[in-house]
Length: 204
Image (tube, rainbow, N blue to C red):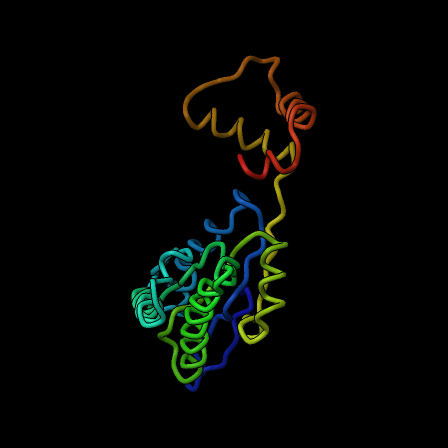
């Protein structure tokens, strides 16, 4: 299931670390949360823990602080899933390059956690997530990080038809009803005519 392999010393199932590519609203976080529950029920994870963080949760003003913050996050997620949203921001650069160095320090701790877990199964399962283009550029520059993630998933944008269906379902779930003339097909055509892909991906 989703790349689970028998790889630890006791022959217990282990899930690989993952990369999620996708625009906002395509379900990356929702799927990661579900994985935490499912993997725990299957005995793959010790806890159903799901911890979502961003760059600012890992980076501090100096190297020592960054290492400390990243270790604290890894410890908090121990036994569960650590979901790093917009992970490509760890590779951001600045004129003084301090921002990139801080990101490298955080990535170093993440790599250390992954490598350490080869001898056990209590380090968190790490999921890196972000926009496809930015993530591909980031991972191309950090091959040492990339090669530790065996599974990738692409989350495509919803079509106008799918967005219209979701909207109608949400309306009904709230106890409201649309006029009979306002059907899914009509809403889908309206979305396609009045919006563009980028606008929909940012607001879906």
